[in-house]
Image (cartoon, one colour):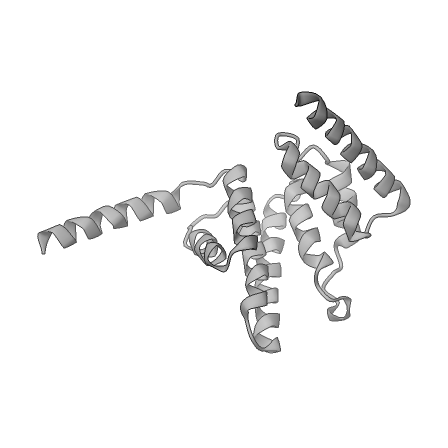
Amino acid sequence: MKKIFLLSAILLTMTSISFSQTMSRSQLREGFLRAVKSRTALDSFTLALDLRSGRTASEECYLGMCDALQISYISGMWSKLKMLDRSRMHIGKAIAVAPQDAELHFLRFMLEHNIPSFLGMSGHIREDVAFVLDHNTFLDEDADMKKMAIEYLISSKRCNASQTALLQKSLDDLKRKQYAQR
């Protein structure tokens, strides 16, 4: 009995320590990419973010994106709409706290790009594309992630011709740099 109590106390302490530490951007990105690929990873990552008290703006935004991913596993249109509202609330709260964070705008763009237009919930797409392009250094430290983001923006077909040309030039430059490093 003492062993079970001791083990429970250790696990509780470890859990409270891990939930009180802020997740780095790379941890959030990696967790989200795993969550996209696996329901188990999604549930685990969502729980880890949801249990955090005093979430940072980036943690709040990634929690909103996890809620959006959960929609594909929910049945019933009303439940899906409620989860979408929850997702949008988390992302909106994050951007209100950190309005100059281009990564948060990119995540909101990803969400709104995938919302059916007839729902009328895609009002920030042009604003977010313009913001991300004006602040395009937000993924400079991770070339592979930056490449994925640029490819996503181009494939979304939400950019005008000059924006697409700028993105294509950035993508070509990035590929040249990656090729030169090999």
